[in-house]
Length: 199
View: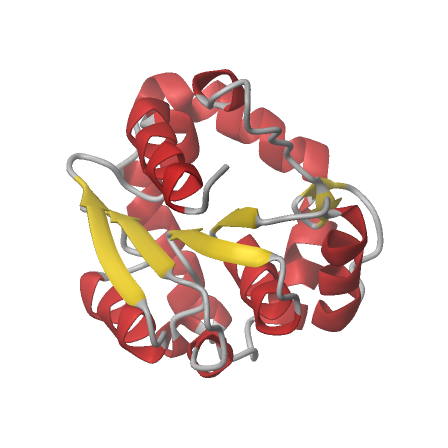
């Protein structure tokens, strides 16, 4: 993914506890602190996928260096805050992912660890990303896969409405793991935001 972005715009992936990093998961505020400490001088375009969208929103709410936000498949839809509903939606979405991606996705989940992922969900599920986004002055682009059951169309629309400068995009044929399954489309969106932010 990073190789598809302009060389003139430094980009990095920051593994966080429960999101690519097998460590105890702290409170959302502490996760946001870790991201804020890693940011450069700015302006900065922040992108998050799935539950990391909530961390991105918490950072954008607090840090004026954030010039734009991209949320890929943001969670957590209030209808999926119960484990049973979340598990069913997760299974339905997983069935919509390309089978060739299964080994990579399994490796990623095993690397993070089911305990850390469950702890992350407990920490972040109660957070109202829509309320946070109402206080974000930067433009917010919400992107969902057209087949994503974890981020349904009406939930994505509600997230967009919450942001003062929100807009919605959809990737045809994609489910939830858009970064892995549709990297060209995601990279094109990010390049557009980088250009608009003057990066």
